Length: 279
Image (cartoon, rainbow, N blue to C red):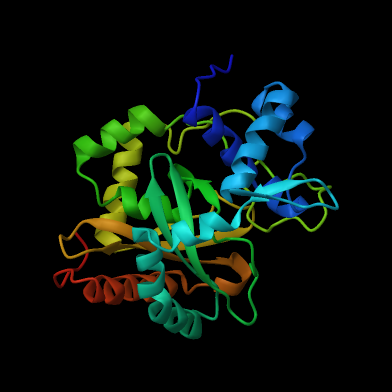
């Protein structure tokens, strides 16, 4: 049963729903749909949305009467650490796209989720759009695993206890008009990113040894490669990734992994990280 609190937490719940892929695909959500997704009274939701609209945190389409995230979020987001990382990553992502001929992404770890903050699209890409701002379950993505491998064993164990069974993210239904491309694994129940913590630890150690992570669990038919980005304190702050089909990659798995790793190291050096290699 959903537990509601008052004030800011209730407003944030509405804002979170408006960030769902369904809202993006449909050009916003109506009051009834927001009320349905939050399991709250539609009159109450209507009042919350009107208040948020006045502040610029949500916008309302006068024709469709649907609400979406507002313009004020953009101005706020440009002042965040994520915005700085996204701008810093531009040249390295572009270089990686030129080398790999695949779309490249920069992502950050936020609890049990991975947030994509910058995408540079390849000319002949299998994934073309819809990624910036998208959340994914960290444990099954190459980006999430690459960043988690940068934690200590005790930090990984704590993460496992808190987030390994995080609920799946909402899916984009197939019948939605112009659905965005990112699709989380189609499961209604939480699933572990590995059979056990011990197995997950071994997986992350392999990532440390190789310098990059590989995952084919996020999107059917796609293999993702990711490598960690470090800052001046040598802490992992992001991950660079690319994804491709098995047919396109052939037997060049390690070659693509090394390209991604090299791009992540170059960006790390730009951020002031010491010269690093596989842990």
